[in-house]
Image (cartoon, rainbow, N blue to C red; front, side, top):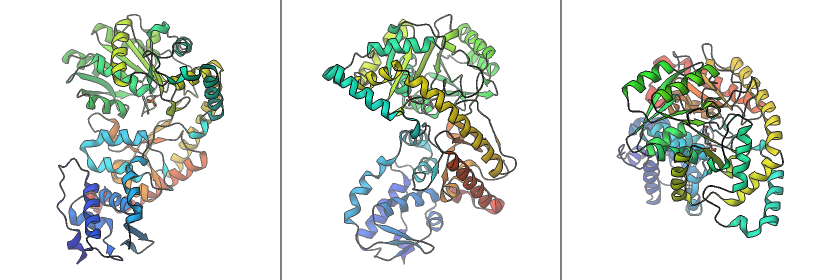
Length: 504
Ligand SMILES: Cc1ncc(COP(=O)(O)O)c(C=O)c1O
C-alpha cells in the first residue's frame, strides 16, 4: 500500500527544509525497493494532506526527484517511480546552485517560514515567466564594451590588474565615482569613496560599522528585503515605518525616534524598492532635519537613482546633507552589470575609516580587474549612453506592464505607475487569494512574482506582489500578466469553500 510507504514523520523544527526531508524519505524508499519502478505516487495535494505539510513542499520534492531521475511525470496521469537512477545522482547534488542571487536572498530571509522559502524554488521551472527577481534585463548588458575594456586593461596593466587591489579600491575608479556623483550634486573627495562588492556589501558594511548586535535599524515599510536579511544575519532588529505616496511617514518616524534609541535609518529616496515611490524634495529636507535633531545616521541607497524614465531628477539626500550625517551607498549594478559586483559607499572620514577596516576583514579587496574595466566603461561614456537607451526601453516596458495589468488582473486590483526603477507594486483584492495563496497556481500557469509580505519587516502585505517588468520583453510581460490573471480566476472561483493551507 503505497500511501503507508510514504508516511513519514516530518520534523517541522528541523534545520533541514521539509521538502528535503521528503526527498530523503522517498529516495530511501525507492533505493530500498519499497517503492518499485512504475509505482504511481499520490498527487501533490493528497500527499500534502496525508503528511500535514504544505503542497509546495511536495511539489518541490517531486520536481527535484524528477530532475535527479528518480521520478517522471506523465502528462495527465501523474508521477511515477523510474527504473534506474544512478546516472542522475550528481544532478541532484548540484541542483541547489541553479538559483540566482535574488532567489537565494529571498530564501534566507524567509527562513522562519518554510512554505514561503520553498516557493521561490518552483519559479525556476522551465517556461515560467519569472517576474520575481531584482535584476535588470540581460539584453541591456554592454557585453561588447566590457570585452574590449577587459582586453584593454590586461594589455595595459598586465598582472597589476590581477593582484590584490588597495582595500579602498582602485584609485582612478574612486576618482571617477567622485566625478559621477558630483553630477548628481554630491560633493565629496575621492578619499571618501570606498569601492565595494556591489551595493549589497556597502549596505552590510554600514550595518556592521554603525550598529551592534541587538541594535535597531529603521527602514521604510515595505523595504528592500536584502537589507532585512542583512540586519537579521547581523542580529539587529528591524523596525519598519509605514510609507505613503511621498515615502516614509515622518510623523510616525518621529514617534519612534522619541521612544527608541535609534542609530541608523535606511531609505531609498528614488524609485523605492518595492513601491517605486519617489520622496519629494520637501520630505527629503524634513527627514534630514529630523535625523540631525535626533542624532541619527541615514543610510541612503541610491541603486535605482538613475533608472529614471520620467520626471525631473531630485538630489540624493547626500547632496542635501549639511551635517555629514548621510552615508550614500550605490553601485554600477542595476545600471550596468550586476555580475561585475562593483558598488561604492561614500561616508564622512570617521565612518570611512571604520568601513575600510571591516571591508578589509570581509574580503581583502574588490577584484581589481573588474574595477579597472568599470572605470574604463565610465571614462568611455558607456554608462551614460546605456542609461539613456535603457531608460527609454524601461519606460516602454512599464507602459506595457500597466496596460497588461489593467487588461488581465481582476477588478479591485491596484498598482503604482512608477516613473523609474524596475518594479510594479500590485495589490490584489482582499476578498480573493492572498499573494502567497495564489503563488502555486501562478507557477503552474507559468508565471512567478515576488510575494509582497517578504518586503515588510513585520510580515504585513499579504495581498501585495512585486513584478519586475524591466527584466522582460514586452511580449513576455503581456503573456505573464495573462497567466497571472488566469491563475487568479482559477483560485478565486472556489476560494470561499477552499482549504487554504493546501494552496501553499
Ligand atoms: C534597493 C536595493 N539595494 C541594493 C541591492 C543590491 O544591489 P547590488 O547588486 O548592487 O549589490 C538591490 C538589489 O536588488 C536593491 O534592490
